Image 1: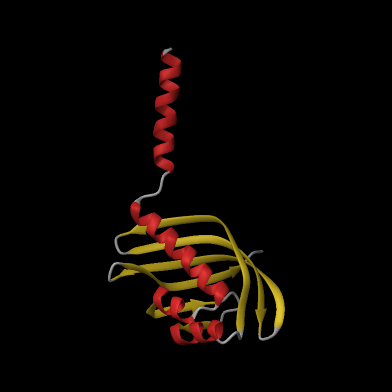
Image 2: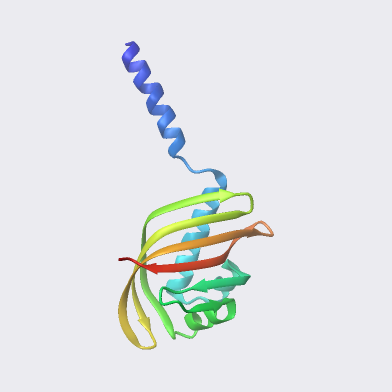
Length: 142
């Protein structure tokens, strides 16, 4: 009986460390909303989800500001057909959050269909009570 009780305590302690904080849950929702907006090319949603100081880095070294980032997606010059993420981690410190994940996507870039397999770093900042994308950097998976 003592062994069972000890096992249950250990299980409860381990399970508790795996749950997200309220802030991490909010960031997870912001990431999900961002992915939906990327897939839809939704200009208004992208504006709502991004900081005016956004720096958006691509895996080829190109860096866009907020206006360039939104225009490329809203105009259809760049198009995410579908996006899948995996291995996501979130670290929140004050009003900043760092998100890392693997991104696998079907894309159309300037009319050319392709696939993207990238490691992504996202930096969110809490502005007026909402998590907004401040920076993004992609790296090719080697």
